[in-house]
Length: 316
Image 1: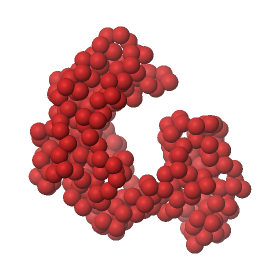
Image 2: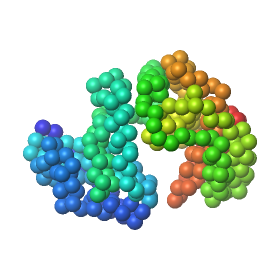
Image 3: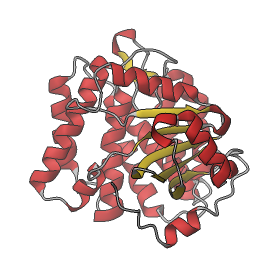
Image 4: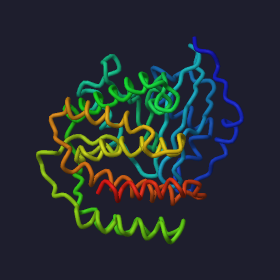
């Protein structure tokens, strides 16, 4: 039997979220509604739900809200992660099932959180809560050996996913993104004009140098659950690691050694050669994350945006 969760002030505040862009969120926090829906969705697990507690992990207004759900049943407390979407997303649940069947079950060396159920009436995806430290935590507080091991494992997981993951869904075409890329500097302009000028320069160069789509490089895309060119996931890992280094260590170069371990390991194990187009996708990710940071209700990462834009211009 699992002990009762210790959820403090953050839990109390999280239940007060109101988001008209996610119309089912209000029902999620209604004890009667959510209990009834859980019993119907997973009668074998939650038939005796007596008590529920929530903690908001991440909230993207108007798009998605991710919750940790603690549920007390006759057998004790159990935990799950719930993702509430603004639009109906049964495709995410089906994609996770496909990925699991492709060799990523819980008992395997490389796995994904087990998809438990999708509740259409609540637009709620339920998946298991995976215990253990996050790679982010290891990269920030671990020693060099621990960071290297984490980077190796991330690269091995991604290489296997790209080799074995299901190939279905929409295709990401770099040239087709030109219109979207052209709009991103407008978001950065909210922070400052000099940064907007940098973003505009990077946007134009990205549009000019966009690589041609090639079917030989298509495979399962991590994160969006559709078919993307593999370089997207590799580039994002590297740039997010750089953003992490700047935000918490004061230098965008602080984790470059770990990023290099990841790239070399991935390239050794993967059947795909990402070297030719990787700089373009790294620059694209720098601009995308700059737009994301600038679009926060309160931007506190101005220097980081400048560092990301500078890095994008440098690698391109």
